[in-house]
Image (cartoon, rainbow, N blue to C red):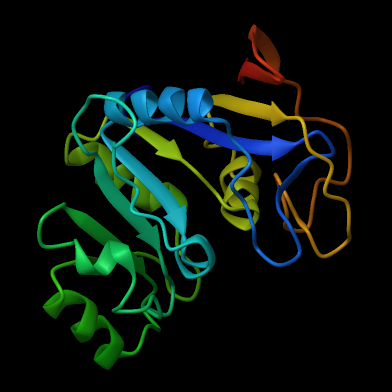
Length: 215
């Protein structure tokens, strides 16, 4: 069972009230020192994974820039194959190995566009992406460690399916508030308080606190 899936690290920076983005999508909470730490972490894993909404709102590169290290495989969960061809990830997919994970209901035309842009497209799940199946596929390809960088909905599904092994969260000195702001974990939520974590390390870095938990 230990080798049936990669080791999964969930990583995020959030406001002190648990938000990872404002209601308008702003999500740059981390200091330069924390960004360097995150990029060192990126350089130590085999793959980095985000959801389609993160690509749409943040337009990230998902590369290692603020520290030395190689760029990991980039994985985008995109059930309907709707990520924009003009996004940074798609534009650089011929230089950096990038996977688009789609459902079986993704339109063939959209899938074809992504494939022509250089992304490796993998169908995994009928309507929603089957995360357990995906991790099994990745493990068979030699992917041993994955960094999940959200957003909130992606975080929810990984936690709901009990696929996370480790959580590293930076609490930043900001308050966001608002029902429309994105929380660290979105989704339906658990009915009972039944997901205990083990605190492994606490580190203070200026006005930020980095919490390191294992499951």
